Image: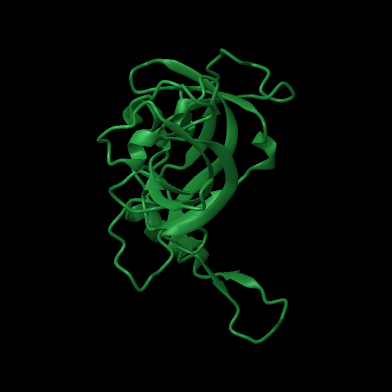
Length: 224
């Protein structure tokens, strides 16, 4: 898992001039660029790094800085993203199942937007020698971010619970809500039960033994 910076599938698009001018001017200017990387800094949105036609490299622009072609109206960053980066440790994955798939998402203002899947950002705390100050691995707090090229020419980053995928082969019940999903708060593990232990030997095909089975189970029930 990359720390701070990671490669992404390159995006050929335009960057808005105002992001190159500290928001002072050039709001009507657009420049071709090639986005090649992402930076993850907790407390800030994912920030993108890109190359320009004059050979210039620019670091740390939010997703609202970019559009597919010139003249696209800029959207508020709050409408394009819900969450900041969860960790310095970021992973970039392009899921083949979603490649070129159409998706729609519901913005914080309740408006639906349609777009095409590009890739996914995800976070973790991968260094146990550092204090885990974030929530990237908390089951009920973790979010990933799917990067979309919107039909209106802008780009967005949205988590699972705001998205619907159009897959004609499998997702055949569009428009239905099959179940009211609840946020998962469980950590699933098989190494926290005192009931089982591996045999104390150097056997390759070692056995897993139940220790004090009935008594142990009774103690567990008494402690509930």
